[in-house]
Length: 407
Figure 1 (cartoon, rainbow, N blue to C red):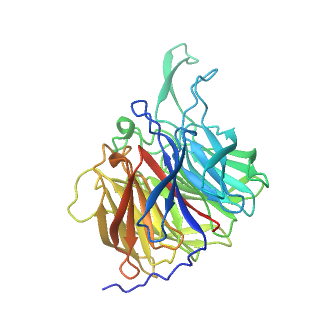
Figure 2 (figure 1 turned 90 degrees about the vertical axis):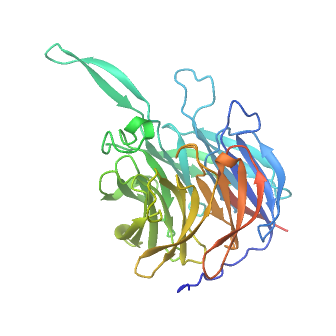
């Protein structure tokens, strides 16, 4: 029997829409871009409203209700001198009040390959992104002082970017760039990039805390969580160094803002942290496997979400191929309480990687990429359990973001 109860979240008034970002695929002309769905407030009805083909690799989205603007990454690597295709970028799209149709406002380049995360503070008019970088390397031949020749290995830069926003929602300017440095254990045990998944820094999230004072960056390549003070620029305030081959990937705050949860990608764990919003300091409270006892196959968790009412924390496992939920105790303890299966992953990089709760916490949507489906699950208010409701076909779905339109 559950010892905690999910507090009811406030249901907004208006019409619910979901934006589904997808990856492009040269073998599938329907893949890529952003699909808008009209969604019933019980999560049972998912109806196609609109599709825009750009940005092609819309791997992460965030919605600004004040300006009805949807921000999307184009998760590319810019293809060298005089690019043939569009560069890695962040796009701003306006959302039609009538039907959720998307229209482009503007875009700005995102220095650093593979922008993979967006954090928004609409009140301050800022947007942050984490750019992961690729795993590819360049062999640069250099001559030493003694005349001998050597090979120097150069890897992509990973970056955290700070954009300013205009009053109408447009991207105004790139205010600051932080280039991540260092690497983790190389090679490591993960098969990513043939064991070189920590050959360089790989920022995978840039999360603005609920007070709007701090940006928390999970750098899975260096096993670090970095805390930046958010202002006109990003000022490094704290660095949390984790054990080798941990791989902090994504961070989510509890509704009260003084507790944060982190997925450890390489260790296949979830951790709880206390967070001091006055100082920006983090302290790990507990960590536990995201897997059931006896599971031995490769697994790398990705997303972490806290239910809007608190009490339960949800993670998707890539390998076990599940969405799993944990009971969150007041002291930071986490107890695995159940799971629902998803489509079998091709590998951890080609698996379900995103899910999101509707604003009321009544249901969640999962972008189940291997199945080419968006799946809807009801959330039990007492046990945190998920029950299938419906599904909708989207090619290569990567990310789910909700918005509410006026009646």
